[in-house]
Figure 1 (cartoon, rainbow, N blue to C red):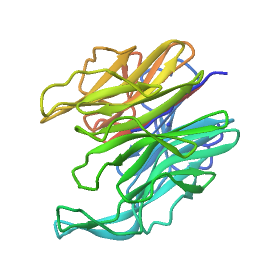
Figure 2: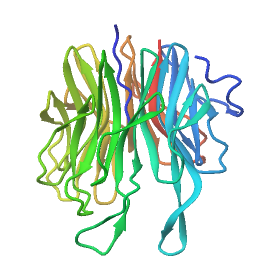
Figure 3: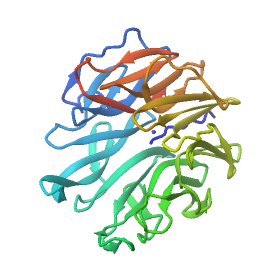
Length: 358
């Protein structure tokens, strides 16, 4: 059975259930089957099917679709939408709103949270008809940063199964689950948890197997994140970052993809895909003033011809490589090195996740 990874940082849908469409702008048709991309256009959550945009929200409130997965002709997407309830203010004059973690099945929305706290859904995986979603929701218990006179509600890493939530962390420190993968009866999730509640954003990469936690890095240094997970033949692969470098862990053993020594230099892996014996990974390098995409095959960085940002990769049975991301203001799909714009040049948009049905 062919295994797939749909990551951060993962067909009946797109017919009558979506009310609005835009003309696709692929310069050529996809090489294999139907190509689904999750993202956003001008603050509206959207799914593209073969380059044609189908809106999941009406744009009255800000929303994004962050992951897409197709199972038995059903299209699942997850993300978030502004709930309309005021969560506070920034700088005294900018209002911020709570968000609802959302699941869409064939374009029909399901709220995973009630909108009275901040919450987002980052990854979706379907196995045996069960729908698994990874994300977070803020705790209802207020905490205080130990060194500052600041109070906040820590985020709790969560896993939803068929809409029912499981808390992966207890809400003592900020934590999020960013990716989920199911292998047989085992459910894997990855993400991060703040190590001390200091507010310094120093986190520990986490792997949860059936709710039991494994720390992938120590609590020392600059911190780490786990962004995506995949299991093959009993081996557990996790990708993310540790310190300043992009990392892939294989059975908890870290393998560096970069060697960043400059203080302001940092790389991360957002998504990876196993195709046969080959590992394809995408992420971004962040410098002091700019960011740019990185793409690796079997640990070797591949050259890119523009300053993309990459968020998700999928490799077809025939070996075609699909990468979802962004170039300047536009959502793009990178296919075998050829760029495909998903919106017109003056439209603000982003592509977070790609899935190919063959």
